[in-house]
Image 1 (spheres, rainbow, N blue to C red):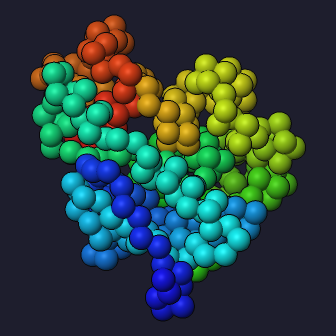
Image 2 (cartoon, helix red, strand yellow; image 1 turned 135 degrees about the horizontal axis):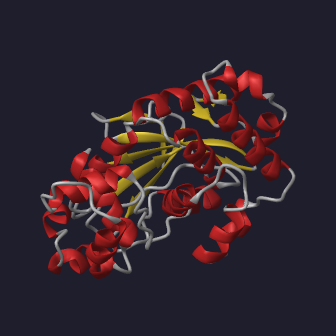
Length: 292
């Protein structure tokens, strides 16, 4: 089907899937081109060359349906596959929802029914974003990331793409310092780009490794700690059983949920989370949602 000069495809998936809550969370990042009223988002994808697809919801939480624009051509199948991966359309959320009905997280899962984990649009961009966001409040983290992308990335159809690793690898620390990066954070970002550009960090290969194998590989990189690896596994690759216990947001959500006087200890968090396995990533997401 063609509409306004663009190829249009209709996708129907199994519910529940609350795309309005997806858009709400995506809209927190100023780089994302989200249209809440139109129930749509533009998605930048690097598939040999840059593609911008627009995903528009036309269904409901229980009967999700989407229209996809802009993916026609030789990369149509690859683009469709990547969109399904980003939005986790293949995952039956009802199974996960039912898992939490007999746990303390039931009220949160009821309140945010059908919220999926949505991946960052590019795994390389995800790990860069994780490093930029380290030890910053969320507002400034988004500001710093936006400066970085608009200074060294590129724009297509009104959507920004993260700068290519080859470009970032050639940057000097002082150039990123001008954007208000710390010297060390600038070194980390440039270092990751150099490893990627040299082929030592291959994100297609990472997808085929276990969580443990990915952890062992990434933790060796300068600037990458457990929090960064866990966030990358969740939002870069969509792994389902991660619980970043050191995350302040999760600690605050648990404090609120269990009406604790202080933030929970790591031992308390381990006890709380036992019944949430094997969907700890979804427990993490819904806990974040509960305080956003």
